[in-house]
Image (cartoon, rainbow, N blue to C red):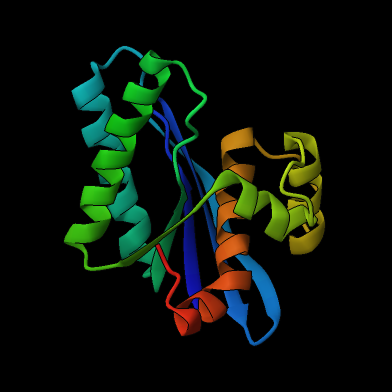
Length: 164
C-alpha cells in the first residue's frame, strides 16, 4: 500500500510517500510543494494543487492522509491553513482517493509512543523508522509522520470502523 502524507501550508506543503509491505515501511519520495510568496493566496493554492497533481500522476498513491487542524492556532493561521487544506482535499477528492485524517496526538503516539512528544522527538523517530540520515524541513517530516501513523493504524481502524 502506497500512502501519501500531507502537511498543508499556504507557502509550503510537505509531502511524504511511504510504502507499507506487510509490517515493513519504506520511504518512497518526500519533499515540499512550494509556491512563490509573490503570488496571491488563490494563485498559490492553485499552484500547489497543480504540483500535487504531478505527485499523484507520477506515484499513484492508494490513499492520502492529513493531520486534523490544531485548535490552538490563532484565527488568522487557522483560516490560511483551512484554505490550503481545502484546496488539497478538493484535489484529492476529485481524484477519488481515500482520505484519512488523524489528530496530532494520534500521530505523535504512533511515531514516538507519546501523544505529547515534541517536534524534535517526532522528527528523530521519523528519520530512524524510515532509515533516513539527513534532516528534513519540518513540514516534510510532519508529512512522513502522518503517513507512518496511517501505515500503522489504517488496517485496524478500517476493521473497527473508526476511520475519519
